[in-house]
Length: 310
Image 1 (cartoon, rainbow, N blue to C red):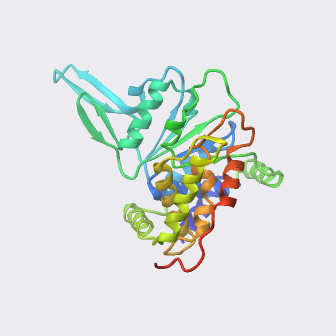
Image 2: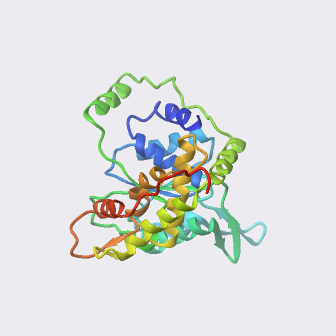
Image 3: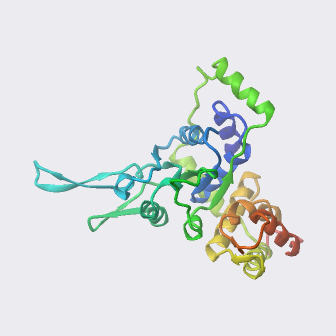
């Protein structure tokens, strides 16, 4: 199983974070982007680098700062004295895996330029359009405890991320393992191996696309999303894009479970990570988004029966 091999390779550098690694792989095989939220120093950058090494894909990193401008990401035209013409110099976005550290430190203008490129899978400069490499995934991070010098991403921009994954501190035992790993330099000669190539990656994409989804499951996804629009505690419910991405993640989850069809648990177990950042709670609601979504899941009837075919 590709995912198990991926986990074992990444674990050469990463302690814990099993759920986040799964979220990252789900986003990747769905062709989506992921937002990692957590305090600094939790190995988010190391995770992204290790993931790209396993995949054998190109990797770039951008540090979000208020003075970063769109061309620092997308690239721009530079005048060539010898030829007397403007020449386009690609920016760091032209890589398979792009890590954007502290995206909420970028100005809204720069954020918008990046998110537009994420949506269109291309960059337009000087009247010309340049396609981004395939596959392409953005791994963005944001620090939830900083309030100065940051520009919070609005719901419309958060909606571009397929999954939002919250990274917490390691457990006591995992913290000790991380210290032992670094103290003894255990992984010095245990380098991460590339386990995939372009053909295998394309096969994975095709297999996920071919996962069967019954009409009952489609109605289940629809009912969950529609309930977010009718709940009095939610000022802005999930969009149709959210429904489509929940469907895609459910198919990818079925693939990880070595199934050729989606069951209700594939949907239910991924609702929080796909929808929590896409809904806007009413101003007087104190409960977190996950709790509100949990109440919706309790009210929506779970389909029963055979899901391999209609």
